[in-house]
Amino acid sequence: MVKTREQEVENVLEMIRPALALDMGDIKLVKVEDDTVYLELLGACSTCPVPDITMKDVIIVAIKNFLPWVKKVHIGQHKFEIQT
Image (cartoon, rainbow, N blue to C red; front, side, top):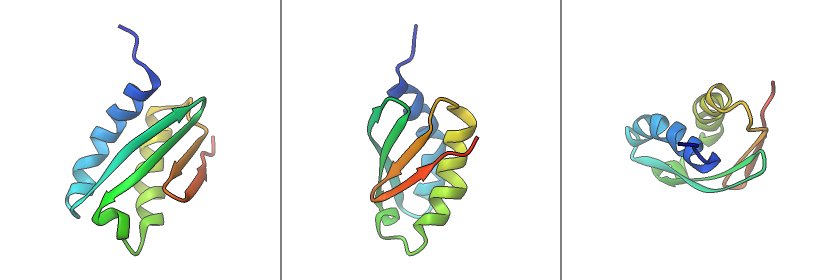
């Protein structure tokens, strides 16, 4: 069975969610367009005073490691270019 890009992203998010849940947060896949992933932080993560740390150190690293086809990640209003 061939996985869609959305399914691939969801699989990575499932690995990240337990860490976010520790701080009463979550993350939602909004959409995938070409090599760009659009995400939204939910719960306590949406009002976190240090979301850039969470995004760069947890979410971006996981996506980069597991999904080499992703070139950009938008998380809410933040845009990150993935360095290869």
